[in-house]
Length: 285
Image (cartoon, rainbow, N blue to C red):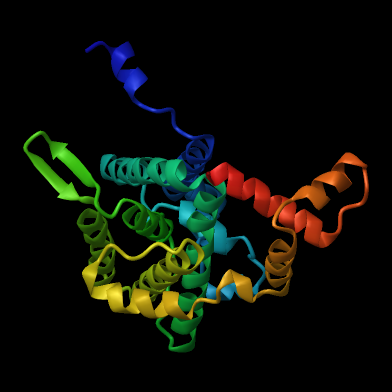
Protein backbone atom coordinates (compact mmCIF):
# COMPACT_ATOMS: atom_id res chain seq x y z
CA UNK A 1 0.00 0.00 0.00
CA UNK A 2 1.43 3.38 -1.02
CA UNK A 3 1.50 6.45 1.17
CA UNK A 4 -1.20 8.07 -0.97
CA UNK A 5 -3.53 5.08 -0.57
CA UNK A 6 -2.90 4.98 3.17
CA UNK A 7 -3.61 8.69 3.51
CA UNK A 8 -6.88 8.30 1.63
CA UNK A 9 -8.03 5.76 4.23
CA UNK A 10 -7.34 8.18 7.10
CA UNK A 11 -10.10 10.78 7.57
CA UNK A 12 -8.84 14.36 7.87
CA UNK A 13 -8.21 15.76 11.33
CA UNK A 14 -10.98 18.21 12.37
CA UNK A 15 -9.91 21.83 12.71
CA UNK A 16 -10.91 22.00 16.36
CA UNK A 17 -8.65 19.09 17.26
CA UNK A 18 -5.81 20.66 15.25
CA UNK A 19 -6.15 23.92 17.19
CA UNK A 20 -6.25 22.14 20.56
CA UNK A 21 -3.15 20.12 19.70
CA UNK A 22 -1.27 23.19 18.41
CA UNK A 23 -2.14 25.25 21.50
CA UNK A 24 -1.03 22.40 23.78
CA UNK A 25 2.21 22.07 21.82
CA UNK A 26 2.93 25.81 22.03
CA UNK A 27 2.22 25.94 25.77
CA UNK A 28 4.31 22.83 26.34
CA UNK A 29 7.33 24.17 24.47
CA UNK A 30 7.07 27.60 26.11
CA UNK A 31 6.84 25.97 29.53
CA UNK A 32 10.04 24.03 28.95
CA UNK A 33 11.74 27.08 27.43
CA UNK A 34 10.88 29.36 30.35
CA UNK A 35 11.92 26.68 32.84
CA UNK A 36 15.28 26.10 31.22
CA UNK A 37 16.31 29.49 29.84
CA UNK A 38 14.09 32.56 29.90
CA UNK A 39 12.57 31.98 33.32
CA UNK A 40 15.93 32.11 35.04
CA UNK A 41 17.05 35.29 33.29
CA UNK A 42 13.74 37.17 33.38
CA UNK A 43 12.53 35.85 36.72
CA UNK A 44 9.18 34.77 35.23
CA UNK A 45 7.47 31.55 36.24
CA UNK A 46 5.45 30.59 33.18
CA UNK A 47 3.77 27.66 34.87
CA UNK A 48 2.50 29.74 37.82
CA UNK A 49 0.80 32.18 35.46
CA UNK A 50 -1.27 29.59 33.59
CA UNK A 51 -1.75 26.70 36.04
CA UNK A 52 -4.79 26.59 38.31
CA UNK A 53 -4.39 27.55 41.95
CA UNK A 54 -6.68 29.33 44.40
CA UNK A 55 -4.29 32.14 45.51
CA UNK A 56 -3.66 33.28 41.93
CA UNK A 57 -7.32 32.77 41.01
CA UNK A 58 -8.36 35.07 43.85
CA UNK A 59 -5.88 37.66 42.58
CA UNK A 60 -7.75 37.80 39.26
CA UNK A 61 -6.10 35.17 37.08
CA UNK A 62 -9.51 34.26 35.67
CA UNK A 63 -8.05 32.44 32.65
CA UNK A 64 -6.47 29.68 34.72
CA UNK A 65 -9.50 27.27 34.77
CA UNK A 66 -9.01 27.00 31.01
CA UNK A 67 -5.30 27.52 30.39
CA UNK A 68 -4.15 24.94 32.96
CA UNK A 69 -5.36 22.20 30.60
CA UNK A 70 -2.75 23.06 27.98
CA UNK A 71 0.21 23.01 30.34
CA UNK A 72 2.33 19.84 30.48
CA UNK A 73 2.01 17.83 33.68
CA UNK A 74 5.77 17.70 34.11
CA UNK A 75 7.65 20.99 34.32
CA UNK A 76 11.16 20.66 33.09
CA UNK A 77 13.70 21.70 30.52
CA UNK A 78 13.47 20.70 26.89
CA UNK A 79 14.91 17.23 27.54
CA UNK A 80 14.14 14.06 25.63
CA UNK A 81 11.88 12.67 28.38
CA UNK A 82 10.02 15.98 28.64
CA UNK A 83 9.37 16.10 24.89
CA UNK A 84 8.43 12.39 24.82
CA UNK A 85 5.77 12.83 27.54
CA UNK A 86 4.47 15.94 25.77
CA UNK A 87 4.18 14.08 22.44
CA UNK A 88 2.34 11.20 24.12
CA UNK A 89 -0.24 13.60 25.60
CA UNK A 90 -0.72 15.28 22.23
CA UNK A 91 -1.11 11.94 20.46
CA UNK A 92 -3.76 10.84 22.97
CA UNK A 93 -5.61 14.13 22.52
CA UNK A 94 -5.52 13.71 18.74
CA UNK A 95 -6.57 10.05 18.78
CA UNK A 96 -9.49 10.32 21.24
CA UNK A 97 -10.45 13.84 20.21
CA UNK A 98 -10.91 12.93 16.54
CA UNK A 99 -13.22 10.05 17.39
CA UNK A 100 -15.32 12.14 19.78
CA UNK A 101 -15.47 15.01 17.28
CA UNK A 102 -16.71 12.74 14.47
CA UNK A 103 -19.45 11.30 16.67
CA UNK A 104 -20.68 14.40 18.57
CA UNK A 105 -19.52 17.34 16.46
CA UNK A 106 -17.39 20.40 17.34
CA UNK A 107 -19.74 22.07 19.86
CA UNK A 108 -20.12 19.05 22.11
CA UNK A 109 -16.39 18.26 21.82
CA UNK A 110 -15.53 21.81 22.91
CA UNK A 111 -17.95 21.60 25.85
CA UNK A 112 -16.53 18.26 26.92
CA UNK A 113 -12.99 19.59 26.73
CA UNK A 114 -13.54 22.67 28.90
CA UNK A 115 -16.70 22.48 31.06
CA UNK A 116 -16.25 19.30 33.19
CA UNK A 117 -12.54 19.94 33.65
CA UNK A 118 -12.97 23.60 34.63
CA UNK A 119 -15.77 22.82 37.10
CA UNK A 120 -14.15 19.77 38.67
CA UNK A 121 -10.67 21.27 38.92
CA UNK A 122 -11.89 24.59 40.36
CA UNK A 123 -14.00 22.86 43.04
CA UNK A 124 -11.10 20.54 43.91
CA UNK A 125 -8.72 23.51 44.17
CA UNK A 126 -10.97 25.25 46.67
CA UNK A 127 -11.40 22.01 48.65
CA UNK A 128 -7.63 21.60 48.83
CA UNK A 129 -7.20 25.25 49.75
CA UNK A 130 -9.68 24.95 52.62
CA UNK A 131 -7.95 21.86 54.04
CA UNK A 132 -4.42 23.19 53.42
CA UNK A 133 -3.22 20.58 50.92
CA UNK A 134 -3.78 22.53 47.74
CA UNK A 135 -1.25 22.38 44.91
CA UNK A 136 -1.47 23.97 41.43
CA UNK A 137 -3.37 21.82 38.96
CA UNK A 138 -2.00 21.27 35.50
CA UNK A 139 -2.22 18.84 32.61
CA UNK A 140 -4.28 17.58 29.68
CA UNK A 141 -5.49 14.63 31.75
CA UNK A 142 -8.35 16.72 33.18
CA UNK A 143 -9.66 17.37 29.66
CA UNK A 144 -8.91 13.84 28.49
CA UNK A 145 -11.21 12.22 31.08
CA UNK A 146 -14.40 13.81 29.62
CA UNK A 147 -13.27 12.91 26.09
CA UNK A 148 -12.47 9.33 27.12
CA UNK A 149 -15.84 9.10 28.89
CA UNK A 150 -17.66 10.30 25.77
CA UNK A 151 -15.66 7.87 23.65
CA UNK A 152 -16.56 4.95 25.92
CA UNK A 153 -20.24 5.92 26.06
CA UNK A 154 -20.54 6.28 22.28
CA UNK A 155 -18.40 3.23 21.37
CA UNK A 156 -19.31 0.88 24.20
CA UNK A 157 -19.05 -2.27 22.07
CA UNK A 158 -16.16 -1.07 19.91
CA UNK A 159 -12.70 -2.56 19.89
CA UNK A 160 -9.27 -1.06 19.56
CA UNK A 161 -6.86 -3.22 17.59
CA UNK A 162 -3.28 -3.12 18.83
CA UNK A 163 -2.29 -5.71 16.21
CA UNK A 164 -4.04 -8.33 14.05
CA UNK A 165 -3.79 -10.76 16.99
CA UNK A 166 -4.51 -8.42 19.92
CA UNK A 167 -7.52 -6.19 20.57
CA UNK A 168 -9.17 -4.56 23.58
CA UNK A 169 -12.70 -3.32 24.10
CA UNK A 170 -13.00 0.45 24.03
CA UNK A 171 -14.69 0.72 27.42
CA UNK A 172 -11.99 -1.25 29.25
CA UNK A 173 -9.21 0.62 27.48
CA UNK A 174 -10.79 3.92 28.49
CA UNK A 175 -11.30 2.75 32.06
CA UNK A 176 -7.66 1.69 32.21
CA UNK A 177 -6.50 5.14 31.09
CA UNK A 178 -8.63 6.86 33.73
CA UNK A 179 -7.39 4.52 36.47
CA UNK A 180 -3.85 5.30 35.33
CA UNK A 181 -4.46 9.00 35.97
CA UNK A 182 -5.75 8.25 39.47
CA UNK A 183 -2.81 5.99 40.29
CA UNK A 184 -0.42 8.69 39.11
CA UNK A 185 -2.01 11.10 41.61
CA UNK A 186 -1.75 8.57 44.41
CA UNK A 187 1.88 7.81 43.59
CA UNK A 188 2.73 11.51 43.86
CA UNK A 189 0.45 12.03 46.90
CA UNK A 190 -1.28 14.78 44.92
CA UNK A 191 -4.67 14.67 46.63
CA UNK A 192 -5.89 17.87 44.99
CA UNK A 193 -5.41 16.35 41.53
CA UNK A 194 -6.97 13.09 42.73
CA UNK A 195 -10.13 14.87 43.91
CA UNK A 196 -10.19 16.91 40.69
CA UNK A 197 -9.92 13.82 38.47
CA UNK A 198 -12.71 12.08 40.39
CA UNK A 199 -14.96 15.16 40.19
CA UNK A 200 -14.29 15.57 36.47
CA UNK A 201 -15.15 11.90 35.93
CA UNK A 202 -18.43 12.22 37.88
CA UNK A 203 -19.42 15.42 36.02
CA UNK A 204 -18.60 13.81 32.67
CA UNK A 205 -20.65 10.73 33.56
CA UNK A 206 -23.76 12.76 34.43
CA UNK A 207 -23.24 15.02 31.40
CA UNK A 208 -23.33 12.10 28.98
CA UNK A 209 -26.19 10.43 30.80
CA UNK A 210 -28.44 13.46 31.19
CA UNK A 211 -27.78 15.57 28.09
CA UNK A 212 -27.14 12.74 25.60
CA UNK A 213 -29.16 9.93 27.28
CA UNK A 214 -26.32 7.52 26.64
CA UNK A 215 -26.00 4.71 29.16
CA UNK A 216 -22.72 3.82 30.73
CA UNK A 217 -20.91 0.90 29.05
CA UNK A 218 -19.99 -0.56 32.44
CA UNK A 219 -22.33 -3.12 34.05
CA UNK A 220 -21.75 -1.84 37.60
CA UNK A 221 -23.49 1.48 36.82
CA UNK A 222 -26.63 0.13 35.15
CA UNK A 223 -28.86 0.57 38.20
CA UNK A 224 -27.75 4.15 38.63
CA UNK A 225 -28.28 4.77 34.90
CA UNK A 226 -31.85 3.49 35.08
CA UNK A 227 -32.60 5.56 38.19
CA UNK A 228 -31.28 8.83 36.71
CA UNK A 229 -33.00 8.33 33.37
CA UNK A 230 -36.29 7.53 35.11
CA UNK A 231 -36.08 10.80 37.07
CA UNK A 232 -35.15 12.90 34.06
CA UNK A 233 -37.86 15.42 33.21
CA UNK A 234 -39.66 14.48 30.05
CA UNK A 235 -39.76 17.07 27.25
CA UNK A 236 -43.58 17.14 27.26
CA UNK A 237 -43.56 18.68 30.76
CA UNK A 238 -42.68 22.13 29.42
CA UNK A 239 -45.47 24.52 28.53
CA UNK A 240 -44.51 25.15 24.92
CA UNK A 241 -44.31 21.44 24.11
CA UNK A 242 -47.64 20.88 25.85
CA UNK A 243 -49.21 23.57 23.64
CA UNK A 244 -47.57 21.97 20.63
CA UNK A 245 -49.08 18.57 21.45
CA UNK A 246 -52.51 20.12 22.00
CA UNK A 247 -52.27 21.95 18.68
CA UNK A 248 -51.22 18.80 16.85
CA UNK A 249 -54.25 16.96 18.23
CA UNK A 250 -56.53 19.65 16.81
CA UNK A 251 -54.74 20.40 13.57
CA UNK A 252 -52.96 17.14 12.68
CA UNK A 253 -51.02 18.93 9.93
CA UNK A 254 -48.74 21.91 9.39
CA UNK A 255 -51.14 23.58 6.91
CA UNK A 256 -51.82 26.66 9.02
CA UNK A 257 -48.17 27.36 9.61
CA UNK A 258 -47.32 26.79 5.95
CA UNK A 259 -50.11 29.15 4.89
CA UNK A 260 -48.71 31.86 7.20
CA UNK A 261 -45.28 31.44 5.61
CA UNK A 262 -46.81 31.54 2.13
CA UNK A 263 -48.73 34.75 2.91
CA UNK A 264 -45.71 36.35 4.62
CA UNK A 265 -47.60 36.56 7.90
CA UNK A 266 -45.83 36.89 11.23
CA UNK A 267 -45.20 33.54 12.89
CA UNK A 268 -46.02 33.09 16.56
CA UNK A 269 -43.69 31.45 19.03
CA UNK A 270 -45.78 28.28 18.77
CA UNK A 271 -45.60 28.35 14.95
CA UNK A 272 -41.81 28.65 15.06
CA UNK A 273 -41.61 25.82 17.52
CA UNK A 274 -43.89 23.62 15.39
CA UNK A 275 -41.82 24.39 12.30
CA UNK A 276 -38.58 23.55 14.09
CA UNK A 277 -39.99 20.26 15.35
CA UNK A 278 -41.36 19.46 11.90
CA UNK A 279 -37.98 20.04 10.23
CA UNK A 280 -36.16 18.04 12.86
CA UNK A 281 -38.60 15.13 12.56
CA UNK A 282 -38.33 15.04 8.76
CA UNK A 283 -34.55 15.28 8.93
CA UNK A 284 -34.31 12.24 11.21
CA UNK A 285 -36.73 10.31 9.07
